[in-house]
Image 1 (cartoon, one colour):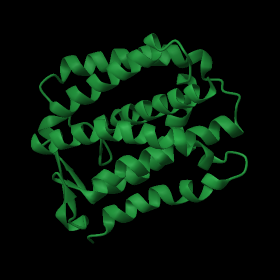
Image 2 (cartoon, helix red, strand yellow; image 1 turned 30 degrees about the horizontal axis):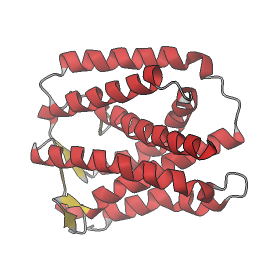
Image 3 (cartoon, rainbow, N blue to C red; image 1 turned 135 degrees about the vertical axis):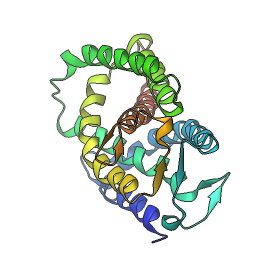
Length: 226
C-alpha cells in the first residue's frame, strides 16, 4: 500500500502531539526549544540519508511510499526526522517531569565509556562498510563531545533512561519498516547482524539521532534560562 510509510509516520507522532497539551508536562511550551533542535539535527541526517541513497547503502520500496520526493528522498523519509525525534524528546521530557528521581546517574559515565569502546571496536572491524563506519563514527564524536567536552550541564543519565523507553516503539516502528520492507538495506554495507528484521546498526543510529536532538534541546533550554 502506497500510504504505508506515511501512516507509520502519522502513528508515531499522533499520541505525543495530542498529549503535548498535558497540564503537567505542557510540552507545547517547549516547542520553541524542540523545533530548532529537530531542524538542525534533521539537516545533518538528511545529508547522511542522501549520501547513503547515492552509495546504495539503503533504498526505499516504491510500493509503500506515495511517490513525492525531494532531492531523491521520499517525503515520508523527510517526515521521519520530524516525527521520531519529536516523539522521543516528548518521552524524555515526560520521564523527567513525572519521574525526576533517576538511579542511572551513577552508572551513566561507565555506560558512556562502554559505548565509546564499542564504537571504536566496530570502526575497526567494520571499516569497509559505509553504514557501520559512519554510524559508529558519528556516535563516537557526538557521545565523546557530550560526555567529555560539555561542561555546562549533565543529562546523559536522563538520556539513557529515555533511550531505553524509546526502544519499545522503535522495535514496533522499525520492525514494520524493515520487515515489510519499506526500507531496503544493502547488507554489504553493514555488519549483517539483525535482531529480527532490524539491522544491529539501527539501534545506534537511533541513539545518535536522539542524542544530537536532546543535546540541542538542552542547549536551547539552558540559553533561555540565562
